[in-house]
Every structure is written in C-alpha cells, then in structure tokens.
Length: 153
Picture 1 (tube, rainbow, N blue to C red):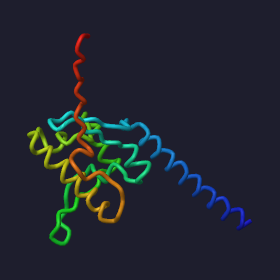
Picture 2 (picture 1 turned 60 degrees about the vertical axis):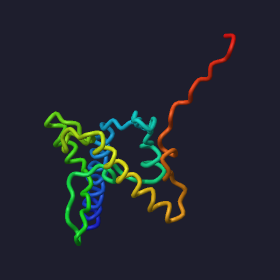
Picture 3 (picture 1 turned 180 degrees about the horizontal axis):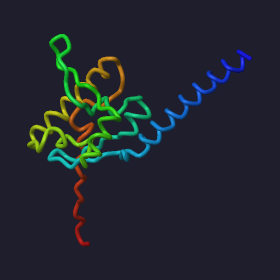
Picture 4 (picture 1 turned 180 degrees about the vertical axis):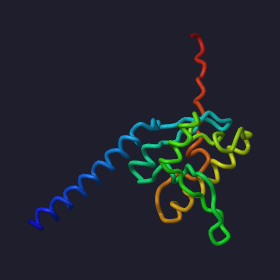
C-alpha cells in the first residue's frame, strides 16, 4: 500500500512539473519575436538574426535585454529580463523589448553607442575564442548596391 502512495506522489509531482513547464512554454510562445530584426542606419541596413542567436548559439532574451544593472565586484552587470518582467510591462501596456520603454527616448548617438557596446563586446570575446563572428563595420552594415545606368536604354 505504501508503494502505491509513493508512486502516486511521484507521478503527481512529475505531472505538476510537466503542467508548469507547459504553462511557461505557452506564455513564452505568446511573445512574438521576429526571426530577423532590421534597422536602417546611416552606414546601411543592419540585420539582427534572432534565430541565429537563439537557436544556433543558445542565447536567451535576457542575454541582450536587461531589467537593470547591478554592481558586482565594481563592475556593472546586467540583470537579464525575465518572463515575469515582460508580463508586468505588458500589463502596463508597455512593450518589453524596446530600449525606450525603460530608458525613454534616446538620441541616435546613444543607440549607436549601446548597440555597438552590446554587440561588439560579445562578438570580440567570441572572436578571441576562435569563433567566426562579424566584428568589422561592413560585416553588419550593408549598404544598398547602386544601380548602374546603361547607355541607350
């Protein structure tokens, strides 16, 4: 009889864990993340492949998107954005993954500095590990090709 009681408790626990994970998966699936995000900037179009960073590299939203920064041994370290924070902002009618939601309207130069610091610092560290990642301006900034005029047309 004790075996059935223990078995029931174990199965109940795993059922609860599965249900919890399914609920979290459902909540996360409701977030609409573009596979590729494009930005038009002076230096040309920049594309950020979310899919490549999430699926291939295994990063999460919190890798780039943060809630706040904490002082850890004299260095400001970002605290990753959580699903709970995303829900909280959504309940307030705010978009969680836009810089201006928390930082307000920034100047173009501030965005440039933040993106370069965030992206390049990570890419340079990966490059130092021997991984093949873009680190030069033209690797990310793509200018549109000019159309050449053909005489007589």
